[in-house]
Length: 406
Image 1: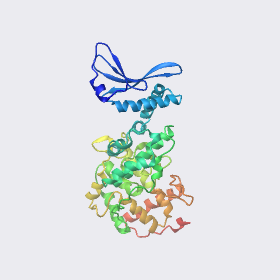
Image 2 (image 1 turned 180 degrees about the horizontal axis):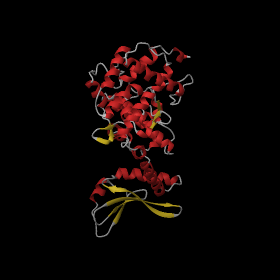
Image 3 (image 1 turned 180 degrees about the vertical axis):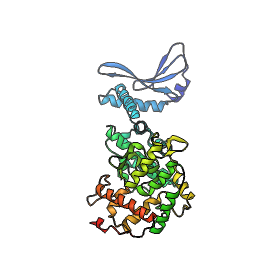
Image 4 (image 1 turned 120 degrees about the vertical axis):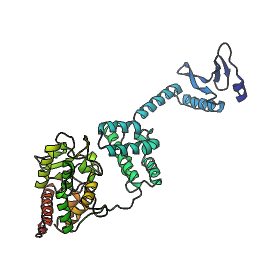
């Protein structure tokens, strides 16, 4: 006779455990301690088995019957429900080991620490935005719409740059999973153009040659710690992003090849970058090496050699020599070089854009290549350093290098 909710609830424990039969081979097992278990008796390959369905009241009578019917359906298909449950449990364990959360933590270990502020921002994005949305999901099963949904929640609070950074971070993790054989593809690649575009931020920059000369003279007359003075002199020569400059490591400086090789993980486009060194840059680096070779960083923090120059180091230096945030910023050295190399010195824009590490694509759609135009960029970087010296010394005899266009 079929059970009812009232009968199940009213079943009292006895000295020995006992069964109350429902229908279709399911029964309620009542233990002496009062616990109640739903079980299903069935035969598979001629062998009698007992399948544990759930406990009452966590699993109601109606729920137990649905589980029973599902199990009976598997049996009718020639599938052992007990083996099926074990397989599903094993699959869940594997999926948990290969979840976005687990894979990202392995990626973080392989990646290692970078900068204090950058690592803190990365961890905030993972803990606050990505883990709650897709952390428990098997990384191989995450779809582009699923990732986009997580990014949309970041956009919804107005954090457009954070959404962009989260997409880049997720892409790096997915590519690591692909390389490790844990996923077949990177779903973030399908989200190109899907995020909201924030307003373009223009950094204050000096681009008038005479004013650039005054700026360079002020930089060379500036007195501070060796790290700050060297970083200030190299910022206009390298015109890389401020974070790339201040986190520069001696292991990335190749005096013999007269170049700097910045690894992909430090770059905005996640591609390695080369900075050819002009004579002036080599001289400054050699002097700086005498005072900071005992540090990992070319420009170590004055308070701790194990850390790089602070975020505000160059900005404060510019303020100290008399330039407001509306006149010149550390990032402005990029715009300064971009403008004068093109408009005054006449170098091809493609060379300049590659040296700026921008996402340059050729006619075939190929993306940024760190070695493209490298020999020509070496010539350009030396000409740029010479030009800045000319402006600094007040010599007004600059001849545009029009031949560079050929």
